[in-house]
Image 1: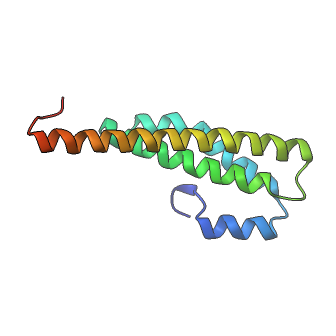
Image 2 (image 1 turned 45 degrees about the horizontal axis):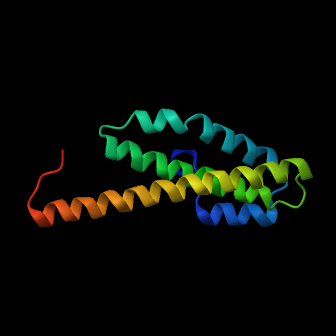
Length: 116
């Protein structure tokens, strides 16, 4: 578990066997609190954007796992489900922006112009 983040395999294992959802809640709160910190400590804006997108994706997966835990209190499951959807939208938006920038970079390279 490098960097304190769970892999997809570990997350899917927790869905079926977790008896301590508090650990997942703790992990996702920790990830959320570091979302801004990690995105501002990168060397370049591109690295910062990539890091924040990856972290947002991990946060979304943690919240999704929590939302699907049958033993979690209904109010927490509903909150995690709602937050998972919001983080998924953020990841989708960031991915779409990245694709637009990639296409713009290709177009600028094709036309021989340098980007600012």
